[in-house]
Length: 305
Image (cartoon, rainbow, N blue to C red):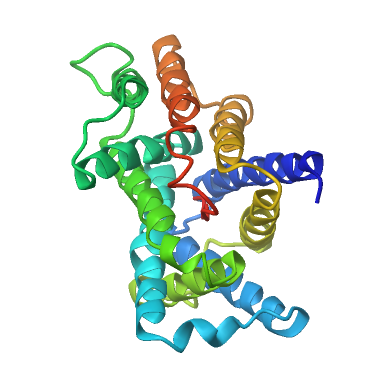
């Protein structure tokens, strides 16, 4: 696939991920839907469909990941502390706040990775990395307070779960890294989604549907599963085939921009001027650290919220 086609795949993928957060916001506003239920439905359905497609329509060895204990352990770890943690916390942040805030807060993941890698490698961050970390922290401060330290401008629970989702992004970026040399990315994503969805059912079973859910809500859920999960995952993995990891990271900034723009224009989300500056500062950290993180993100998987 040419670089141009890979870029197009990456742009469409990031855009669809951003739209999925908006669809979730709409669903939470007009129906009594628990975010835990939506997480379970999304992951269980998307994981099952993806693995079935890979099994029956490709030559991928879908079940080979279970032949070795180490591989199986990492897949389970990825499903629980990567996919499930990121998905559930992201939707809880959307539920208590809005899609724009949740998506931007999740974008703190790369900055957190820089800090963790510095700790584990016992080295100080580079100057660029240090500037990115400072900008990320200051950006969150502006987003949360709009410059007024005495008053929060967003729901504290939305802030809490948004930050947790950033750590979830760290988990599903780093945990599967050893698997990528021997296992196709879509296989890892499929099992991660399925495992996370099965565990989520112990929290809120998918068959316990709110009586307030109507046919329109069901269509929105289907759209989140198909167009907000399956298709963008596939397109993102396809984009990695012809793009440098740093370029894929830069395309990822489209997601929070789409979510923020649609939240403001379609959902009436009100963001003050300093909050917008905070969002831009957080997104700028992705630009700054994309090059230092080349090795970390090589052949990475992004399982978005």
